[in-house]
Amino acid sequence: MKGRLSRHEYTVTEVRQIHDLPIPELVFRAQGVHREHHPPTEMQLCSLLSVKTGGCPEDCAYCTQSSRYDTGLERQRMMKPPEVLEAAARAKAAGASRFCMGAAWREVKDGPAFDDVLQMVRGVRGLGMEACCTLGMLTEDQAKRLAEAGLTAYNHNLDTSRSYYKSIITTRTYDDRLRTLENVRKAGITVCCGGIIGMGESIDDRCGMLATLANLDPQPESVPVNALATMPEGIRTALSDRPPVDPLELVRMIATARILIPKARVRLSAGRDAMTREAQVLCFLAGANSIFYGEKLLTTGNPDVEADQGLLRDAGMRATELAEAQLAGQGGE
Image (cartoon, rainbow, N blue to C red; front, side):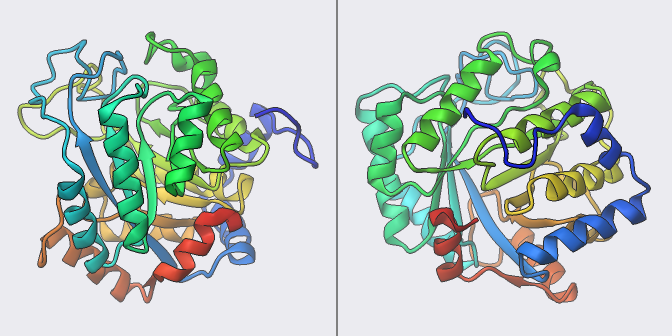
């Protein structure tokens, strides 16, 4: 991730000046940037599946899958490739063009489980979909093997600013995260990297995270913006008592990310299920052009899927076509 942007590197002060603009001005600027680089009524639909749930040795305070806390989440065996590909096929039938697979690992370890992931990636690409994985830390060789299997994108979030990071995670460093991103980039895989708001961080921490993302060279092709999610009954994390995030804070983050990282798909991610339709549309106006869709295992008639289809229809928006998604995933965006 070495090198500098041709214009200059953003400072936290610069980012804060953008972030703190009046909402009408901020969204207006973000919409202008968005229209320069993306079709204004297009939305990429992504489906996310946990292929290995629970038992992670990391201590990420926001995560239900950490073994360091009694979260109430039941640990599950790793899914087999045929199960995952069935879910991917259902996601495609429901309109998703990107299929994301996550495993609760600190780092990838060579062996049968990783071989299964490579088979999953090949199978998803064989369906004509973009394939994304989030598996923890990667070596250069592992990133190369994922690239050879056809992986479109690798998700590895920074989560927050460098200065606040130790308040959330102590089992790996910020530089560990940046090193994985560098390995992904060297392998020719596109980078999906964003963060979470609502964890007790300051506004400067949020702006610091966005500055770090904007100063990566090249910039990430995908930037997920997450709000700390409300947990289902019986499930807790170390941050469960944090108050919910005001949707306007998400709007500010999305608009600022759009201005700073104009070519990326900015993904309205965790926390969307707690937002009204109007708040979601405001996020779309601010530059979000991807959502996670049907995050439960998809079946025909899934009410979450129907609600999202209705929202896009009523907003006059359309889902990204698979062929367009494939081109975007090959580095175009």
